[in-house]
Structures are given as structure tokens and as C-alpha cells.
Length: 322
Image (cartoon, rainbow, N blue to C red; front, side, top):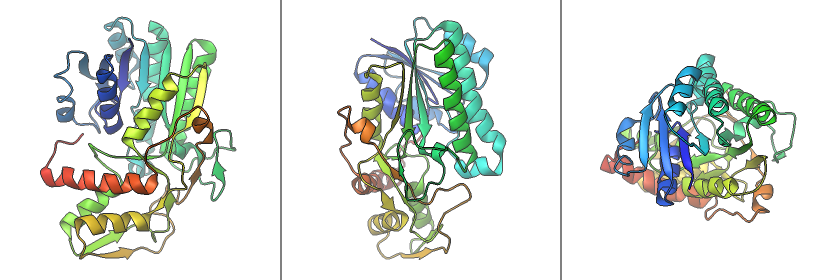
């Protein structure tokens, strides 16, 4: 069985991935500096004898090398550590440099010293930039990210590709869409719910609502990651997402309003994008992954509808979030 290290291990996706790995009888060592993740939620996993957590700055190569040295026979590293607040990275580029790129450098340093055979990397659709109505396939180019987050994810991919050439036996690159579900910490659904909790009669939306993007439920995402992990190949790159062309912000706002505060009026902005660095619409091709036999259970609309209910109930109940 695999012995797995998950960086960003106190995050939303890591929590769901860890649950699946533990259920399969595997060992999980979660690493996080807790700058974004929350320690309380990780405690829910610590009741499992095959799970452990270490608070560590993954951007420190020395600390990562020391930590890996204390854990024998690591087989897989799932590198999920990154800054998840894109607007914050626009305001302060050092955030993505340190938390998105240097965490990759630190992780690779530990992998090299301790000869870990496999790296799985959580990349992003943000690496592609704003390609308008072009269908985004894995080998499209040029790649021109418009956010510091996207730039540092792309730089991380390049660093990993060089590592595969030099010393890393195997790497899988997962290019994520917008991922939703629970336990939620951020994102458009949670933002809308928080706004309606504060002002139940009005929902203010950034942008004119025409933004259209792919959304994938975290259950489908984890299924895809584990599916790719079992495919043969030295260096695999896959878009992960739904099979449809996405859902608009207007549709999301209406789904949230209808479930949380049906009496609320929705007020939209005038711009076609929500913030600097926002890609207002993209069309994600997952044909390459589908040809390997994987398909999601939920499309964008169904994933959003399910997540609205899950996140709203989470917030009403005061469930511990990560």
C-alpha cells in the first residue's frame, strides 16, 4: 500500500483526498503551515491510526528535507499546498511566490534527497490565461496566465517537468477547474451565502453575471486524481472537469438566493469580470481524460446545486470548516 504525504494537508481538497486514501487502507501524512487551512478540521482525521499531521512551512527546503527524513518509505507526494486567495495574490505577489511556487521548490528538494518515486501536483486552469471562446485542451498555447496564482502554478509545472528529466521517476499534473463541496472555506458559493446571511434582502454580485466557468464537485475531483494516479506513464498532464461548458455566475447567484433567501433581490455589476486576474469565461476540454475511462457523476449545474445545499447547511449548523 502507498505511504502518502499531502502538502496543504489542512485544506479542503486535501481533507477529502485524505479520507479516501485512509478508507483504502493507506497511510497519510498531512503537512500544512495553517496560513489558510484550519487545524480543528484535521483533528477529525487524527482519530485514524494511519493519519498524522505536521505543521510545517512547505516552502522551506531544509524543513521539508528534515521532515521527509523522519518518515520512512514515502511512495507518493500529493502537492496541494498553494495560496487559494487569487485577489490577495494580485495585491501582494509575494504571497503566490512563497505559498504557490516556493512550496513546490521545497517539496521537490525533499523528494530529490529522499528519492520519493511519485509526485502528484494540483495545478490549475489558471495557467492557460484568458483564451476567450477557444476550447482549452492540454497542449494549447501559448500559455499566458493573467494572475500571479496562475503564473506560479505554471512555473511549478515547469519545475516539476525539469525534475522528471533529472531525478523524479514519475509525475502527474492535475489541472483543476473550480472545485466545490464541503468542508468549504472560500469560493463564490460561500461568498454569496455569507452576503445573504449579512443582508438577507439583497445579494451584491461582482461583475455582470455573464462569467461562465466549469465547476466540479470535490467527490468527482478526488475520483479523477486517484484514477490518473493508477494510469501508466512517466509524466502525465490532464485537465480535470465536467463534460459541459460550465455555468454562469448569474445561475449560481440564483441557485444560492433561491435556497438561502428567496426574497432577496440580486444586484449585478457592470463589468464582464469580477476582479483583476479573473478569467470571465473558459471552456475546458476533458476529452483526453475521458478517453482513459473516467467521467464525472455531476455536471457543473448539478455540482453547484448540490454544493449550495451542502455549504448552506454547513454554515447554518456551524460545522467546523477547514
